[in-house]
Image (cartoon, rainbow, N blue to C red; front, side, top):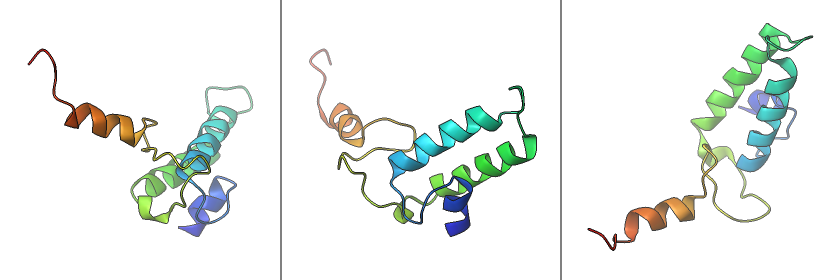
Length: 89
């Protein structure tokens, strides 16, 4: 998995937020539809991100200490939405 962090230009155990930011930045840079894009590099970046997304135990807590899921939503907000009864139910 350390090679996956390296593929994204990060050190082992980077935060989820760092991984997301690195993936988005590199995906924009190497996307095959962008002038100067590199399909092989883009596929390697995407594969590394996918493997890391399946292994959340590899991440260190983010600097802001707010739990973030890999799809970008705050886990606390999602948990509150599920646990809070609806006023209209």
